[in-house]
Image (cartoon, rainbow, N blue to C red; front, side, top):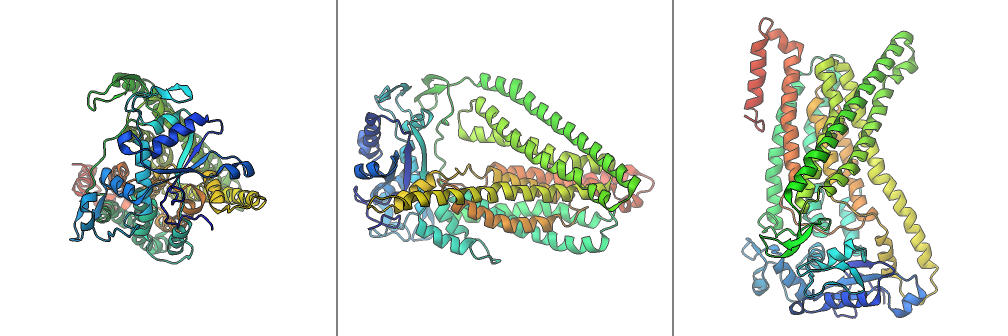
Length: 607
């Protein structure tokens, strides 16, 4: 009989595997035995009370390639008690949302003692992750077999095992049957329909469901801009100064859509129970280091690092480095303008067809250079933020996002601001915006989806050949799945996905009044983005652990900030237009005061 994830036998010898632990090949047997005992021991004995077994038994290890792979699962009772421990919020029979408790389990909708579907698979895997991460050292001073891997009371064992290289990785398994159903309703049939956000949430968790919900909402919100932009492009395309009406619509649109999203986001997360879910105490991040001491807040023994040292690193090293990168970005921008001048003079002197095509080459090269610089800077920003030694993962993420957003904003938009407000060349602005937007979208599709999918398909074929060549008389279904998934790329979170949407929002909201097709290209890109991202999540990358989320976090603030900049930019463009200037031929001061008043009165702009 084949072992599949749909099996619901929860006895210790045959249980539903939910999570995989991969250990290093040279891990000592005493370490393995100690880890197994800590995982399966009862809670009162300091264990996680989970189910645990190797992927391969002794006979299979001799026959197959020896893999230090272990499967982790849990009984239904353990999962329900874990749901109570993490404060999971579920819907009650009276349609209210309350934190789940095992003692009142029968008061919750769809709960039945004989039904194992009360918790979604994503929730079950999150609970197992929580239990493993909360395995803490008691009286151990070190990991057995590794005297250099020191422990102290209260230290997370899994974090120490990961940082010591004893545990290579931990990842949740796909459920092939549930995944196939999700794919059929999501992206395998190309039809214009809403995404199954609730199903995505049930399989991948709230954080990823919110990203796809926001991607869908943002795409739908772009459609009015695209519909208005198309006739605007057709009828007033050659008159670059007639952009006042479109700019006026642009500044209203950019402020309204984010307010509507906040309401829709709150409705979704309330229905999912994460809006009212209590925030858990945040543990120190795995990379945090310092001198061992007593935390004055928690009373636990943990590494302590003086905040003044962190501030010195931020202001004396990170800040100057970011400023240097910003200067380099501006320097590259000036090289781009020199290339534009050269291409323009060459075209004016010859006037041939090939030189008219050459006019787009500098913008294309600059767009490619921007993408390369953004990716290189991202690695540097991650290294610096890690070196700053932030205690909490949330602080680390906030500092990283701030660094990346500042550089990406200047790198992507500085040339457009320079063309619009210094050169005041609307024809060049339209050409640069179109080239930057389209080139960045093509490059992102290739780097994020096409290339990883091709590499994954190649690896899949290799694994299939290896499994088919096995002479062992065993069922290799589960073995093949685990080996295949462990080699998949790791999903690093929604950071890059939101960043791509943030930059797209900037291209559309800031200067699309001079290139009305920007929104239409963004819509077309996002239709393919939905499917390519779905394919990436389901078939290219490992399944990520779900993370409860009440909103899109700091990205809401980032988009709102871009919205404010968009309002100011569009008001300035309107104030610069010949039509508005003709209304105030005598006094430019009146024009400036009216533009400032409009900026202040619009919602979302600072007073």
